[in-house]
Every structure is written in C-alpha cells, then in structure tokens.
Length: 109
Image (tube, rainbow, N blue to C red; front, top):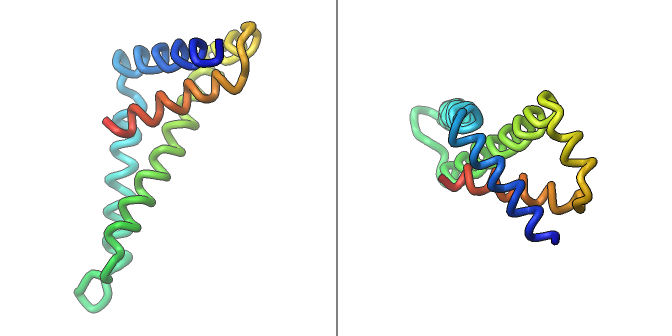
C-alpha cells in the first residue's frame, strides 16, 4: 500500500510537471542565478578560490531542490489537492515520499 501510494503521487506530480514545466523553469533559473552569485563571491584577486566549485554546485542543487519541493506543496495547497490527498485513506508518509521522489526525479533530469 505504501509503495503504491508513493508511486501514484510521483506519477501525478510528474504528469503535472511535464504539462506545465513551471517547477523546471523556476528551479533552473534559481540554480543558474545561485551559481553565478557564488562564482563571483569566491573570486579573490582575479583568481577563483580552489575547491569552491564543488561546494557551489551542491549549494545550487540543494537550494533548488528546496525551492522545487516548496513550490510543489504550494501548488497542491493552492488547488486544494493537498487536502484531498490528506483525506484519502493513505499513509501520509507515502504521500511525502512520492512527492520527494518526484522532485528528485525532476532535479536529476
């Protein structure tokens, strides 16, 4: 039951995102802006700081993921689908895991 609910939520979120691409564009823009800001911040005397590239990339990925997860839940709350999901006879953890896996799938694309 748990995996079935998580799979259904993941499929629903992925289908909505392939139609609208709202989260994809927002996340991509935020990640690029984050990388640009940090790349300017980690330059000293015209030379980039060594080892900062990996940290910049992970910060951009984590912040973008946080933004995407928040926007996914906001879209659900705005259209009252979150209430319907919470009233369904399904484990709440499965709903969260399905949404989380959907965001991870979108971020990995």
